[in-house]
Image (tube, rainbow, N blue to C red; front, side, top):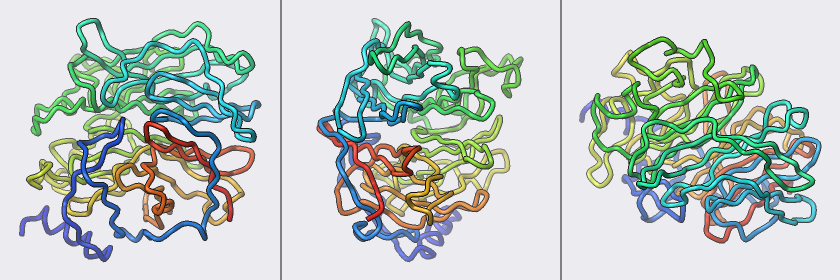
Length: 408
C-alpha cells in the first residue's frame, strides 16, 4: 500500500465507510460525465431524511438549470440566474417571477451559460450588479467573463452592461468555467476560473502555468482594474490578475463573516473534491498535488498535498475511494431562524444530491450532516435570506424549483 492509498483508507476508516470510486452524475450543467449518482453516508454525515430538521417549501419553479441566488437589499426579492441566459427577480412571498432585461449574450453549451450573480457591497447606494458567464468568439472558442450593469429592480432592467474582463486564453472547450464571484471587506472582487478540462496531469498543466488565467482565482477592483497589491503584479512570468492558482474547478466561494477569509469549494477529478481557504499567491496543487484519482482507472493524480511543501492543502477533502461530494455554491450561516447553526458552512452537493452542513472552528472543518438526501435533488447552490434567516436552495435540473428551508 503506497502513501496515497494509506491516507485515503485511513480517512475512510475514521469516517466508518469505504466505498468504491464512482463517476459523478450529470444533469444539464453537471460538472462530470453522466453516471450513477452515489450518496455515501461517510465523513460523519447523516444520510437520513431531513424532515425533522427543516421544512421545505417551493418558492418558485420552472427554472432551466438555475445556477446562482442573491437577495436584493432594501427590496426583498431574490435574483436567480439560469444557465440558458435568463436573469430573474423572484418575490419570495408570492412566488412571482419577472425576467430582468439587459443581460449579455452567453454561450450555453456544456457547462457554460449565465452563471453567477452578485451585487456591489454598497447596493443600492451603488447600483452595480455583477455577472459571470461563458461567452464565445466567432471561431467557437470560449472563456469565463465577468461584467456589470446598473440594476433597476422596479423596471426589472440591467442598464449599460459592460464586460470587465475575459479570462485568457480562450479555448475550444465547453467545461470548467469556474465562475463564482465574491467581494471581500475591502470591496475587492474575486472570480474563479476553471482549468477548462485539460487532462495533461503534470507540472506543465495550465492550472500550474501563471501565464494563463486557467485554474485560478482572479482579483479585481470593482471597476475591473487590477489591484496594485495583487501577488504577481510586476512579475513578467505571471498574469497580474491572479490571486491564487492550482485550482481545478472552483464553483463555490464565500467570505467568512467574522474572519473575512475567502473560502472555496472545488471539484476533484474522481473524488478529490475540496474545501479551501484561499490565501494570497497560494498554489492549491492541481494537478501536481491532489487527493483524488483518474476516472475509471482510479490512479493517483500527482502526490498528496502532504508530500509537497509548496502547495496549500484543503481544509476538508474527499479522497479517492470516498465517493466524493462534488460541491457547488456555499454560504456561512448568520441568521436566527436556526440558532444552533450560526457560524456553520452550508455547501450544495450535485451528484451527492444533498445539502451539507459543516461546523467550522478556525479552519478546522467537520461535516455535521447531509440534508435533503431524500429528495433526489442535485443541489446547485444555497443562500441565506437576510431578514428571516431562512435558507434558499437552487436545484440543478432542466425544470427546477428554488426552495426555502425553514424550521419545522
